[in-house]
Image (cartoon, rainbow, N blue to C red; front, side, top):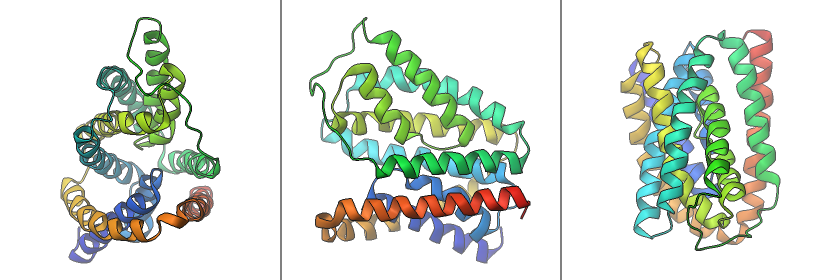
Length: 258
């Protein structure tokens, strides 16, 4: 990458991290459009590979904080992550064989679904002290397989699918599912990134630069998120609208081959 591209990569990583910090999950899907249309990464597969590696790093960082707070349900988290990571490898292998424009069109559809899911009100039923047992294990394994495959195919963390998957399979609360999902976010991203890397589709310098920018973006986003706490719902809807607009743009570029 040229120096200008590296600077834009750092700024892109900072922007994604800032938006994630201020508005919550779903923002990592903006990494691929930023890499393609701002940084100038030519190959959609490479952009997805870089993004997946960044998602894994972001997931680990967030997981550390949630683990210290004791919010992660580890048995459920480990089972979902291990099974889902294997499925993510399969999903990313399929994606590598698909032409770039077709993959981008599918990615735009995924972005649209993520944006739409962010517009729905969040419900928080469930058992705060849920524990993994034999009855829920088959549901958890099935959900992990489906979600992991989708996350690997699209090169995203899949948090918007992991959280409802965990809640459906285990009956845990929304807060517990959000914390528990982070191990899977990291695992799915790592599985996808390694798979792409084996095909030479990950620029690790870009990953490192994007991660550094993400650290700065997180630090900047923390005080902003506190200032905007009273307007969180409005901010989340506006952010969802941004994701939907970018999804339309990505679909247009994919269809026109631009």
